Length: 466
Ligand SMILES: NCCCC[C@H](NC(=O)[C@@H](N)CCCCN)C(=O)O
Image 1 (cartoon, rainbow, N blue to C red):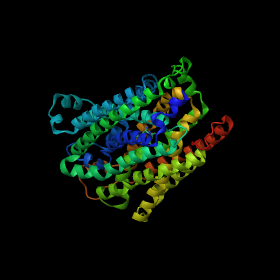
Image 2 (cartoon, helix red, strand yellow):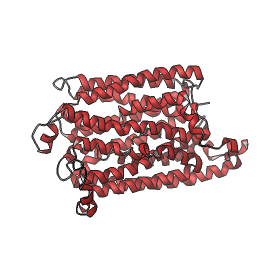
Image 3 (tube, rainbow, N blue to C red):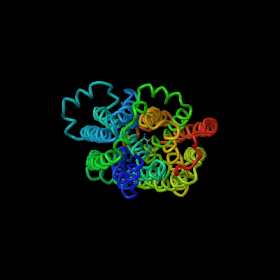
Image 4 (spheres, rainbow, N blue to C red):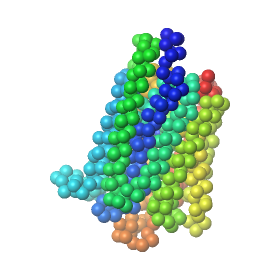
């Protein structure tokens, strides 16, 4: 058995990195699609869609509806632990393509002429039919992308545990962030060619390519399992049981990381959806220019993440790194909230984006490789699923909260923008203070995590590489 493991594909550096490239490529395209509408908020507020900020925020949160309300993420985790990596990757890929197709259809002219559009427009008149269908499609896509996220994490642990695990996870996230960079650069350009539907169509085409790279990876996965043979077969007592969910939800390390995760990410991903508009309003620049500035946020964070991962593999200090990341998160959101528009300039904006970018590499780089240290391998997929589920509750609700707070703190502005009033813009102080508040709570939980780690001996401060 030891010999089989020694000759396994995962012992070959080249094979490990090829596997990583394949699964990361899919995440590049998946993250591209996630934010395909993010730089187009103002375009969507106008004809023919007329999506108000609340509607826009609701669609952003829609990605998480099925994962949270129908518990799809917990189910995805169980599917992953029970059915294995290959089955779950293919299922995730197909689900993403299906959901993305619906979202594209919702934005096409053809849809507006259909009976479905009339039906969807016949209730809750504040939400246009196109938004309702787009939200349904995005919710289905959301199931796929989150299923893909947990499966990719488990796959990286499978190939890299005891090796360059944090660096590999960092690289995968870096590639995914490149997708966000690309979308902030390209989506406005595609929209100029044919409106928001053109951007979504391009995202859909990219996703089909992503499905292919997942598919190609499954051959490597099959080969690795074959090589490991019985060594990969779990003993009956090593199999996943539904009762393991109870163990996950009573594990103090898990609960603290999950809390930290929802708070931290609630101040990042929902912010990303509003950032273009916030920068454009605060700096008084075009949406295209603001989107181009903000595109450096994910790419900067992405580039730094593998280096932090490399450091964590070698030196450890994972729990402390999460604390430093939470602190930087608060600093950056407070700058966005409190520096008045008259004093806010491009240099301050870029420095603040860099601070936020550093936070966005410190926390993810240390958080995700910490999970295999606090739970058993047989229910790792479910543990990732449960953390994502808790995180998704925040990611679903926070964009709605931000959209609502933006409208409430800027009475009449939405109507002025829809009417095309020159110079009408939002003040983002209240939403930014909300984001900073999440960061403050995240600092508190990072401190708790360090205490729990010391008490339970998870080894979060220890290096990953043996
Ligand atoms: N596979 C790497 C671990 C997760 C990375 C993390 N993504 C998430 O937490 C997702 N649940 C949320 C993604 C939201 C956009 N769809 C990340 O840092 O990207």
